[in-house]
Length: 145
Image (cartoon, rainbow, N blue to C red):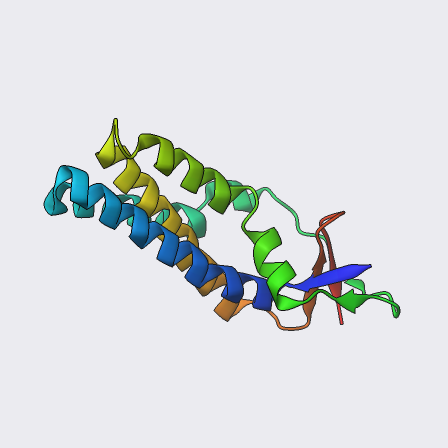
């Protein structure tokens, strides 16, 4: 069984999401102008971070106590943790941004802002995460080591 550190996983994927988002905003700016692209990107990033940390549904979700980690569990390499954390959100947003770049560059900038917001939310979550918590991505079970 390969476990992923919740803290490390979030901190690894955050810069990838931010860099991809900034690249999409820059690509959109070259097609539609800097002002509208920056407005769309910054708006999307702020909205996403606000929603991520103020989701009213979280009051109704009961998180189970982490289970003790199995003694034979290994921690996945950092590259594997980062790549698995990118699926499906980061890859999906980037595919949609690529599709939107030529027909709707402002939508591409907005999606770039979504990626930046996902990265900022991941960075904040990673900084606040308990370093003793690990995730089994196959079952979504949280363990404590």
